Length: 269
Ligand SMILES: NC(=O)c1ccc[n+]([C@@H]2O[C@H](COP(=O)([O-])OP(=O)(O)OC[C@H]3O[C@@H](n4cnc5c(N)ncnc54)[C@H](OP(=O)(O)O)[C@@H]3O)[C@@H](O)[C@H]2O)c1
Image (cartoon, rainbow, N blue to C red):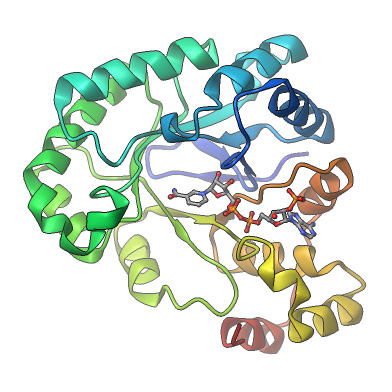
């Protein structure tokens, strides 16, 4: 049985998603996605920026898994801050994924990455893009909408102008990374946090404290790190191209003691 989380609009999101960043557009990615579907993943995180939506769409079609059992997230690229360009890239995503809706559509970033420190310059553009997401939501083409990599100021800007508030915030989240302010914001506004890079891009599986806890709980380091994300109320999006790790990263429903969660919260890289 797949565990799931309920969003503020009562739609359900599977509690663990499969990350697809850096999986390129090719037949290898197609077979990785097919393996992930076989391993039991139903929730996939992609983005127009990843340029792999066509391979994901092909794998889904090949799998014969009904669309309604899948949860697909995509994102409008950070550099697009224009309504028509947002609609165009969204339609391309639907064509590539071979679907007529996404389960979740996000603004990938408040500004192009190199300009994120001055994202206020994009306040108007972000509101323009958000209004397109609201329209897609009302038309049923995006079953939920949200943002990624936003600061508190970027969130305030959207909320000042929104008629539908962001339901999800996708941010980097892993043991030792303090995201308290964004987590408090999400709690206040009843947004789900999606934890990206939940293994710190693979770095934290080698951390001695994580290895010690893995021994204590008879789990793997990755399972400790993913349960940490779940215990803190987030939805982790681990990426792997290996079949054994796909299964390992889904088998993450157990309890960590409160003091071990605190240890993980404060580990240093
Ligand atoms: N919104 C955004 O701006 C944003 C930014 C970054 C990421 N994301 C999303 O979040 C997803 C995950 O983040 P990420 O790819 O940065 O990093 P991650 O999931 O934290 O780590 C991936 C790395 O960990 C390794 N790994 C996976 N499972 C493992 C296991 N059980 N044991 C040991 N090593 C393991 C993988 O290697 P192998 O593949 O070789 O197994 C890969 O090198 C992305 O794919 C993407 O969907 C979103």
